[in-house]
Length: 146
Image (cartoon, rainbow, N blue to C red; front, side):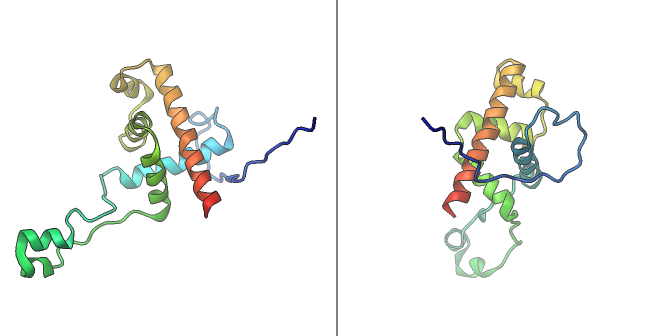
């Protein structure tokens, strides 16, 4: 029986210099996802909304036609890479979303993350690792479909 070896379709290249203590046990693909999640966390930390908080129809209903014509303040947008990661995080299950948001947007340590999630520290690390893998799987699925 011949064994078929499947090579990964998406092989990221990581060209970042970082402290070796922070990512010493991560394989290259996990490092790439970690770096992208950190960038996503930096961009979305302040709670930027990808959509306007009030639509034009909502402004017409609340303020009338004259109020809706006023431009108001410009809406901030996030980059395409961050929105791609944001979509992948949104597709994850609820516990993965919470772990990723606490860790990457609020910059909590694994100890603090474990306390908030009411689990042991090692268990929180495993949940975070699996959440990274799921984000990587969603990104790979997006790349295959496009």
